[in-house]
Image (cartoon, rainbow, N blue to C red; front, side, top):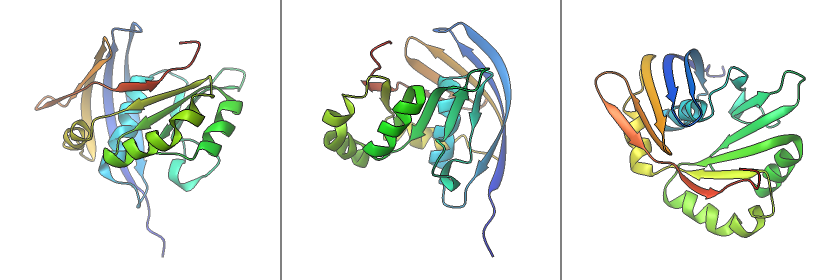
Amino acid sequence: MALKATVFKAQVQISDLDRHYYESHALTLARHPSETDARMMVRLLAFCLFADPQLAFTKGLSTDAEPDLWQHSLSGEIERWIELGQPEERRLRQACGRAREVVVINYAGRSAELWWQQNAANLARLRNLRVLNLDADAVAALTGLVARSMDLQCTLDGGQVWIGNGQSTVELTPSVRQAPDHA
């Protein structure tokens, strides 16, 4: 019998001072049996970084044709395609052809560094690609916030992110490896 996804609920207050976006979101995250808590929390962080009423979680790991998150325009075009980890260059080329902006968020420390070294030159040709990297220690601290029901506050200011649950706060500074030409 197949294992089922574990459902997590997150109430997230987002204060993005850089984009002047201030909203509360009630999110449901289905953690695939093969997904780690760290990856699930990076998905949640990705939502916070690019929060928008049209941004949505997808089937992700269980569907090859979809990213981890995406944002559609009101007319159905893909505005933003967000991938986590170390996707293949071919997949990113295809995504860049389908979406206005593609974002990759690396979070796996040394293996993410190796992925970037191997792919940076080819990815530089993708003009609508943004690649961010998260420090492995910060991701480990973020994983400490995991609970089946989470009440989180997230503040973004000047490229820094603070996310907490009332008892503890994690500070992250995503580093930009590549920014799109239009950014």
